[in-house]
Length: 282
Length: 272
Picture (cartoon, each protein chain N blue to C red):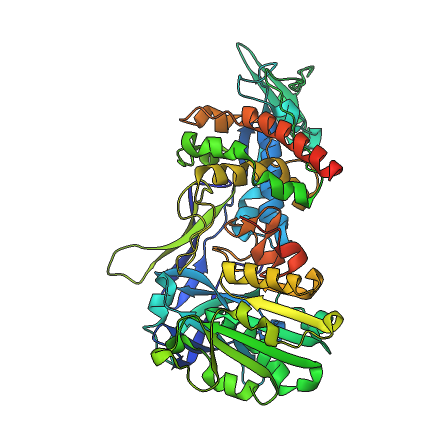
């Protein structure tokens, strides 16, 4: 909805680009706690980064209201939201919470909805996931030199063979926002068409290709490193606040090579601890 | 709300062939007062797409900007089919550009540019050349692959009035003899000819292929130039130029927003 696989931005002819009109009706989105946090990361990029507001994202975003769905007490087996603070949602961030079971329980946060439930007593509150089956330790990178050394860790080379650069993890990721724009024609002989954007993945060939042939990060390990560091370091460093990754675990669920993101981050944490210590001793 | 991604049409005024694959395009533009040296524009061709192109010249009085276009991609291939009078679409300018007033004014400015890296520095060099009192001195090293690849020959001759210019080519010149005034070898081989006697007063701008910038910066540091006085201009794939599409990101830095010009103290960490 907010970052569809493909999205029309403009309709064009030879002499004009005309922006697509935004949605008019309000949208109700049923989400988990981690999703509400993921969309805050979307907001960082689409509404705040560089002081530029993406008009297409902003148009849909202001129409969205969230219904918060209760998760199993510890989430699912790849979840690690409690380690990433993706489990916590403020009351003003959703209009009602809901438990979908044999009976349906609701937790009304928006007073205007109370009329619908007039006469009923609301005692239910969506519980937060206090801990998961997996916990993740986030590496604390002490300075720029350590950050540069993380890029040289042999840990990444291990993934050169395992990761097949398919991009499934970035499609599944709740917080991946990258895109590439392209123009398409309605018919091969027409001058009319659309400028669209399509989800892009830093794992896929061509992501960094420039006209003239230069490109960056050719190996699978380098690409996995680029994505991992964005999720657990770079985004938070740029915007302040929490890490980009919300611990939804969907990347691990979707990886055809069974790469577990939580295992990777824990392994990285051990290596970063060693680098921090070496840096102090230098 | 103003749509930041919407390009507007502008008319091509002049097309000048500099080399077989590098042409200069002069295009009408209405927001010249916003431009700083070294910034870039997103050029759109309907049906083909959008590409970031450095601004290589601008003139507020006559209302035009210039681009050095190298025929290497989808958008640039189509640009080479266009003529004066045709329209292209543009949005921008984007990026930070060179901090001339803050850092280079009244200094010994040294510019090292390689190949189409001459594009981003040309407007600043021309401005300094036309008002040489704005710096203490300016020296320029230009590196090209071979004699046929040399760009902006008219500009170079006018820069020679004020500045020490070293134009060097990587490939051995024909018959082993370079034309008058042309040197042989990589740009770094000519750094010893520069006036680095007052290191505290020098500011160095390096623009070119990634390896050329890396080795040049390292060489200047070795010669005693403080890292804070070295500046690089980066090039990356971009779809949006406004910090949304993610292609140009390196670590916590977005080249389109925080660059393309970086001080070497920051630029040396921008490793992909």
